[in-house]
Image (cartoon, rainbow, N blue to C red; front, side, top):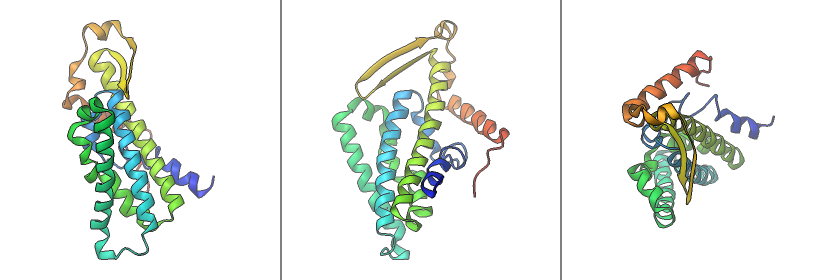
Length: 208
C-alpha cells in the first residue's frame, strides 16, 4: 500500500476522529439522532475538509507562520458559508435539522486540526487522502451512533434526507416501548462512552 492509501486508511480506525482522537464530539452528540442527519453532516464536513486541505496545502509555503491560524480560519469559514447557503437553498429541511451545528463547522476541531497538523505540512495529494480518510472515519462513527440511537430510541429505522423518505423496518418490542433516553443527550453520552470503551477494549489506541 502506497502512502496515499496509508493516509486514507488511517482515518478509518487508527486516527478515527470520534472514537480515537475524540474530536468533533459536539456535532456528533447533536446530529446523531438519525441516519439522515448523519449523512447530511458528513456531506458538509467532506466538502469543507477536502476544500480546506487542498487550499491550505497549496499555499502552505507562502503563508507566514504567525498568520497561519487566522488564514486557515478564513478559508474554512468561506467554505462553510458556501455549504450553508447551498443546504439552505436546496435542502431546507436538512438545514433546519442540523441547525446551528452546520455553521459551527467553522470551529470544528476536526477541520482546523487537520489543517494545522497535516495539510499545512504535506503535499496536496496526501492532504486529499487525509481529508477523505478522516471524513469516511467520521461518517462511519456518525452512522454507527445514529443507527443505534435511532433503533433504541424509536424502535424503527428510517432514512429521510436529500428528498428520500425510506422506512426500513420497525422492531415490534422496541416499537411499542422505545428507550427514548437514547434520542436525548444523556443517551448519546452513554452510547458514545460505551463505544469508546469498546474501542479501547479491542486495543485500538490513539495513533502517534
